[in-house]
Length: 117
Image (cartoon, rainbow, N blue to C red; front, side):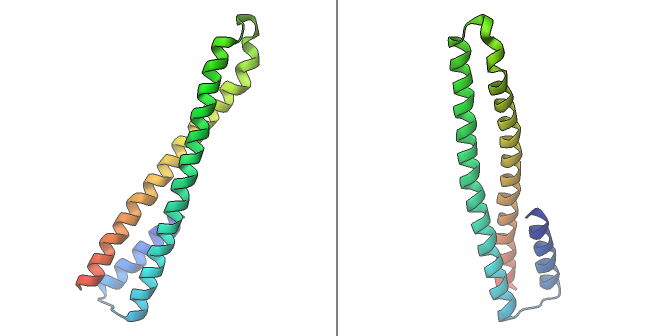
């Protein structure tokens, strides 16, 4: 997805530099922005769901840490590993969503340029 957005930004910038204005280009731009907006919304919903699951597992592991007897702590190791994995994946997902959000904003700027030229 990141490569698609970068390629599209490069393409539309080239078209704006050439001062290419056509109804087809404008329609193509609107469709691409709509597709990227849809992708951003889907990623937002998945990211929020994923972070919610991460928080639930962290709370669960904290509660179980207090409830579990000291001599049975090794039963919690898989849950701690799951927590760590989910945290790492959540950070990666937030980073990806951050990229999507910023580049969609850049596409809005390109839309303004398109309309003013």
